[in-house]
Amino acid sequence: MAALLELDHVAKAFGTVVVADELSYTLAAGEILGVVGPNGAGKTSMLNLITGSLQPDRGRILLDGRDITAMPVHARARAGIGRTHQVPHPFGGMTVFENVLIGASFAGQRTGADPRTATVAALERTGLLAHANTPAGALTLLDRKRLELARALASGPRLLLLDEIAGGLAEHEVQALIEIIRALRGEGLGIVWIEHIVQALVSVVDRLMATNYGRKLAEGAPKTVMASPEVQSVYLGQGIRA
Image (cartoon, rainbow, N blue to C red; front, side, top):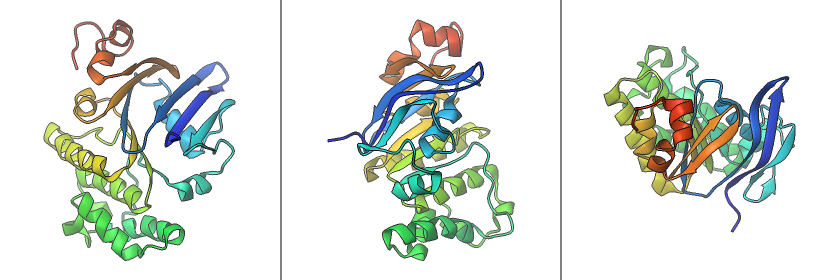
């Protein structure tokens, strides 16, 4: 069976700045891959390459064994790729329900699912149903993060890309997000999760990958990766534990 996602020697540079250096890995359906690395390591650029908002200089990106390297952003979204962004930008004057309905309506065109039913389901999965009629601009940061996730889920993805969704949150708020993401594991989604909060990743992901300047430093069991001397020196610094 083909992997849900495969990056095959993907390379991308902006002049002398390398954001993907012959990057290769696979992700199975139902698997969660965590990605760590210092600022400027190319992590968000990697997600942009997967979604199609960046095009690689060389290499291939495959979804279910199908080469999507030249596929435009909207076609990849229709193929089942959803994502969140580091900084949530909801439509502040619209309600939470209306914000999520946009993503669900897009998915409904692809799957034939009822957009309102999909919206309610996404709000339930993210703990936002009680805030359905709240203007998005009035939400706390945690609930804006939940809304970002709900909008992505409402699009009906098979592959979910999370870009520092826990960033800026207090420890108890991070734990609330962890529980939501952990619950997604049983739904067969493939998830790539970029995060600086290493403890959050280690508690959830199946595998961890560390990168720097677009190059893969280490990949494997989370604690093994975090114990790697190269990862310690490049990302964590000596003496810091996951």
